[in-house]
Amino acid sequence: MLVIGIAGGTGSGKTTVVNQIINEIPNQDVTVISQDSYYRETDSLAIEERTKINFDHPRAIDFDLLVKHLSQLRKGKTVLQPVYSFAMHNRTKDTIKTHPSKVLIVEGILILTNKELRDMMDIKVFVHADSDERLIRRLKRDIAERGRDMDEVLQRYQNTLKPMHEQFIEPMKEYADIIIPNNKYNTVAIDIVRTIINERL
Ligand SMILES: Nc1ncnc2c1ncn2[C@@H]1O[C@H](COP(=O)(O)OP(=O)(O)O)[C@@H](O)[C@H]1O
Ligand SMILES: Nc1ccn([C@@H]2O[C@H](COP(=O)(O)O)[C@@H](O)[C@H]2O)c(=O)n1
Image (cartoon, rainbow, N blue to C red):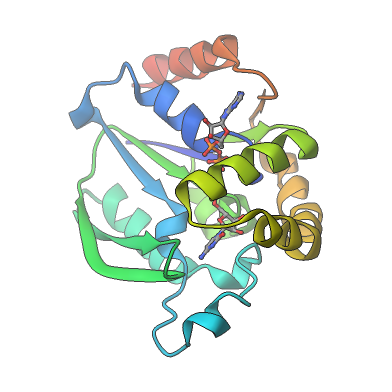
């Protein structure tokens, strides 16, 4: 199994890059795990309290479960990947049966902050886009897809996203084997990653 980690700030284009990479790999040969599925449960908190959580700090992620699932998949076992609701700021009651395969992609803003996870990755990729570009993308996406409004996104960006990005995400470039510049769609970089995958399989 080839384990590829894809990190980068919010709105940098990680999900888009993952979809471009897996586009030409047969479905049965690739598994994707998203760090977003592993946000901690917030069952005991009222919705108002959940909105105050700092979702860009590593402590917001249940890394124990993520590490456990990744190591089970590496051992050829199937896992039940949680399903996360951005509207409820919580995991839903659903899970997705996630099977091991030849290529396993782990994607998320904070995945490179965890040493155990890093050590399980064969290739570490960091997707870079400038902060103004990421803010514009995040604003559009969160309003269109995640039930947020402009004030919420801008406030969260200033109070949380920007400082957390500078403290926890940007420094993770140090661990990356490949940095993809993604201010514009970067088909050359995607082709390079695909070639590496094909060579290693
Ligand atoms: N290179 C790019 N140029 C322009 N828009 C992009 C690019 N990559 C992604 N996007 C758009 O930006 C938004 C955020 O991208 P996404 O892949 O969800 O980022 P991430 O997973 O890093 O948060 C999406 O609406 C996506 O279509
Ligand atoms: N309830 C939540 C949980 C997380 N977020 C934000 O999601 C971002 C990470 O996802 P990307 O797809 O953008 O990488 C992160 O920056 C959190 O602030 C949220 O808005 N609500």
